[in-house]
Amino acid sequence: MVGTNLKAETTSLMDERDATESEINAIIHRLCQDGGPGLSANLVDSEGFPRADINIPAVRADRQRLAELRIDHINLTEKISQNIQLLHATKLGPKVSTTMDSDDVDMSNTVGPANADTTSGIPFAMVDEIAEASPAAEDGLQLGDQMVKFGSVESGDDLLPRLASEVQKNQGTATSVVVMRQGVLTSLYITPRTWEGSGLLGCHFKFL
Image (cartoon, rainbow, N blue to C red; front, side):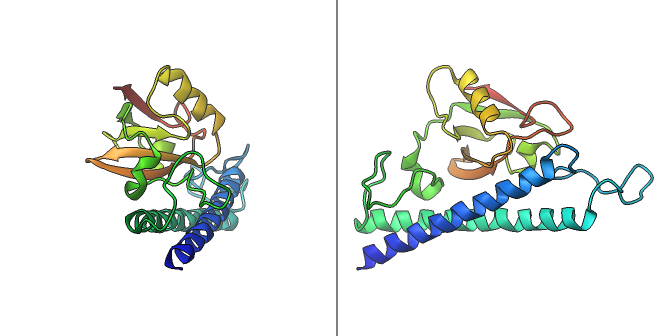
């Protein structure tokens, strides 16, 4: 009974996280559309006056809501990871795998220290440069982070073209990322997007 309840709770949390991701993507699309203010651009002009080309109250509300949703997403992911760890420890739930039975919990998008077995766990690149105010920096990537998984890309052959393709494919979409940070697998949520600098991430990877 405990296992069944825990599985049901985990499924509910995953549904809630999916809804959170959908709302995040909608806000990002709205802010980053052509002529939009983006996620961090100034809301005043060069003379310090409020910009007349955007709805400032609406933009502020969207940015505030986005910040809240990102915190919610982190908390949901942590709770899901804790539940999965408990299911494994008590052997009440199914073993995590890439192929799940229809009545199993879908864990394919879950990342974090508690369920590191959903990734290879092998870093394939290290962040050796990161630009200030870049998408990567704003979304939590740090200098020295070792990339374990970016979207569907993990260690293997042809990493550079695979990673470049994944970034392009996920432009404007919040993307699940796993990094090794100070020896601990850490989950992030990065949205490749245009900004004032070059590229869609604003960082450089050194492949290992």
